[in-house]
Length: 223
Length: 223
Image (cartoon, rainbow over all chains, first blue to last red):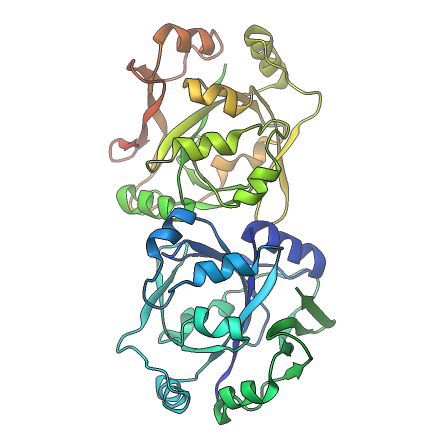
C-alpha cells in the first residue's frame, strides 16, 4: 500500500519558521539542502518514516531562471503566492512502496512517469536525491490533492535522519485535516491509499492541520 | 593584537555557493543559521579559529522590515548590490582577544561599542550568538575596510566547529589580498592590526582573494 510520505509547510523564511515550529511544539529539524529551482528546506522527521518539509524560496534569481523546468514548472510562483501572508500547509505527498505501484497509480489516474528518476534536492553533503514523482506539485497541490512519489534509494528517505526532539518521541502523522471535495480526493487516492487518516472539513481545498502522535500526547500543527 | 576572524563571501544562494566552493577546493561547510535581518549563512572553518562565512539574503520581506535596525542598517541592500553579478568577497572582520582591546580600537577609530553584547546569528539549535562589534559592516565593508569584533564566549567561535573537509587540511588564513588605498587600510588596521597578513594590491577597495594554508600548499579563493 502507498502511504503518507510528508506534508509541505511553505514559509517565507525556512530558518525562522522551523525555529518557531520548534519553539511551539518541540519538534526539531535538520538542514535538508536546496533545489536547483531556488528553494531550500528543513526537514522535521515525525516518526514512522514521515516528515514535515519546511520550505521557502531562498534565491529569487535562480527561481526565475528555472521557471518551466521539468517537474518544478511554476512551483515557485505557487509557493510565493501561498505564503504571502505567512506559513501555509501547501501540499502533501503519497509514497509508493515500489516503482510498480507508482506506475499502477499512474495508469489509474492518468499521469506519465519519466523513464528515469528526476534529480531532486541537493543535500548539504552534496548528494543529489533522486525520486520518481508525479504529477508535478504545482499542478496538484493548489487543488488540495497530493502527488505521488517513489524513492529508488529508500535508505536516503528524509525522515530516517535522526534528530532529537524536545522531550518526546513522535510516532508518525496521526491525521490530516483537509478542505475540499472528499469524494474527489478519495477517488484520486484510490485503492492504493484508501486507509489514510483523513479528516474532512468544509471550505477551500487544502491542508488545514496535521496531527502528530507522540509518546506524550498529540501535537497539532495548524497553519 | 587583532587578528583575522573571518571573511564574508556574499552569494546569491548560500547553498549553491557553498556547494561550488567545496567542489572547487574540498572545503566543507556547516549550517550556520540565520539573522533577523533576512540573511542566513554557512560556515567554512579554515583552521586557526578562522572561517569563511558564505552568506546570502534568504528572506527579502524580513530584510525590508528590518531595514535600519540597529547594527544591520542597510546591510541587505549592500549584500544584494555586491552580489548582483555573482559571488563576491564582500567584507572581512578582525577579532580582538579582549573587550578592552576592542574599546581601544573603537576610541582610535571613533566608533561606538555598546555596553552589552549584540545578539547576532541564531544557530540551527536555536541558541543565539553574542558579540561586540563595530562599526556596522554596511558602513565599512563597501570601503574595503574590516570591522572589529570581540566574542565574549570564545568557545562558541564559528571557526572552532569541526567539519570533515575533503582531502584537505586547512591551517588558517595565510594571507588576504586587499584592494583600496594602501595608506587608508594601514591606518585603519593601526598598531592593533599591524601583524595582520594582508597583501595590498591597490585598485578597487575590498577583499580580492583569500589564501588558505593547508598541509599540501595554499588554496586561493578568488571571487
